[in-house]
Length: 238
Image 1 (cartoon, one colour):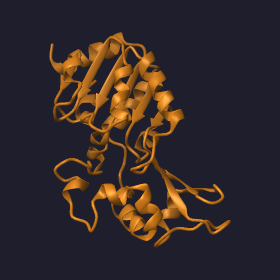
Image 2 (cartoon, one colour):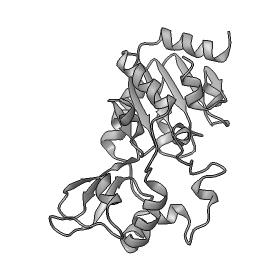
Image 3 (cartoon, rainbow, N blue to C red):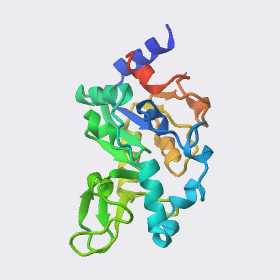
């Protein structure tokens, strides 16, 4: 029995599957991985990406933040790939109970997934820091410089977790509950190096832990199955 057949058998035997994904899930949609060879950490800017995407930088230099944000963080033409579509199909069939993602691109929802826990927020949602009015991503795309609220004039910011900011407690707790309740956890497209998000898989005590990633992870020794392939290519075959 090969790896794909083993994965398919585990999926058949499981009733409460949770998928935990990282940047590698969206690279097949053309969105670069932060830490990959072509990722943001290997590109040249006036400031390191983690500085530009920090709370303090946003507050001090919102125009420079938005210049980088529009250029590198908004996915203008990305579409859901085979991984997103298969996960939505698994949820519709009753097998998958939740997607926990570190990504901020909204592609899981666009593929049809309903229960998506976005640990780092989403570029699709934005809000006025002064009055709380909500704006979609088109409001950010349609403006130059710093976007301002049409109701009160306040600065609009993306509903994403910046460096120096904590994760949303409700999202974290929901992720912990889903992972703790799962009988199968599929971890894909993440090296499990970004904390506290990566630590959430420690709450899993189910039957099958499957890791699908191009490189080794810190959880390899605990895995029931390890597949060194692109996540979309793997999930498309089950």
